[in-house]
Length: 612
Image: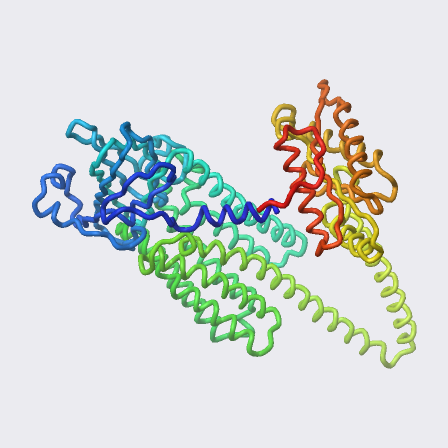
């Protein structure tokens, strides 16, 4: 239940805003509302030469009258040399200024000038932009954050933006608490995505180091450059890698996009073996690669900064279909490994197209559109890894088949055929035995938590499902206890993860010592354990949990000169006749555990009520 809630919260936080605003150009602050989409409400003025100043805009005349209502939900003007002014009127009905944050999500804006009224007829200016060192920002975040004390009553606010890159930005106004709550979910999303990406690079790198298969090496470079490209245009590279080099931060994004497409073409040629399997397509891919590199060099030396940022984005519209066409051509003659390749690049191309269309200003900016390339790459990584594995397997099968044919030809007319067959059978039996032992060992380790020696979550779910079915058929009792170590994060933060591991091992040992041999103890989370009690009803299960709780509370772990005391909270639930599955029993135990935590921890709660 906890994981499902987390994902729902993340999706809701990253979806477009659904808050309603008052009339065009006017945003009215509402008590309790955490965010406002200013981009949908602002009036827009395009300053083609980029020479207008605030005094010109405030003076009225042709400049002021050129403002028009912006009907799109977010600002997205593609690649342009123009400067854009945004004007929004904010109505604060409160008697005192409201402390808010202006949030600009796009990290590559060159110049950001925010003008807010000072309450005395003038305006206060705040200057930001990625042409400044990262330390010039008030907040250490990839997006631009500006403090906005919204004055009581109706006042006009102005924003001047200029960017040589793709001109798009969500313009949002947040209360501080709402923004920080939302930003934690963004951090979780990026942590998950980049974590998966780094794991895949290391995983395929290890396979390349073992097999020396060039496809894995090129694929690792492909993933690594995608990481740099994505990390760069999401603003994290500027924040963590080169915060004192805004010029390189601006220029490097284009290099990563070109390099990513070049490596994608090289990987396609290598993986599909286009030189021998698809000679015509191989020449087309080579020609595209030459044009790509030539354009890369040309826009780099041209000095046209807008073209420099735009050209690699537009190349995606040619690169992606070309790679997909190569995959389909390889699939036609029955090249088995091309199946996963085509599926992978369908996902990747779809995502890249949506991202490129968004960056180019051809479709509106939304979270899903802009981050579609990331979603596509997640599917791409899984499918291409499968494709590489299938390709290696196919090559191995072909090599083994060729070797076997050669052996059979040599011994077909000699008396060695019988002996060779006997040797082959013995080798197969030995290999089968080795594989069986390896499989048994792998299965054992896949079911055991290496830190504590008790069962892991996967094994627990298998046993629990079987026990639930057995006890339900025999109309026998079945109870489950969920255990969560109280304030475990404080132990890690204060004494280190080694101390936390010692506490977890101590709880596992006490749990195994406190139950019967027929009971089943498992570690199902970081500091969370579960005990399955076949044939035990609610009352004895409560007694078992209470006894274990007392032993844990009395336990002291010695670690690195420190005596660590700790407690745990318990949730107990018993199977009932109308339970459709073990998940219902586990859910009630989880609710009981939550109730124990809410009630002050270090206690046992039995079968909390269902949550509505």
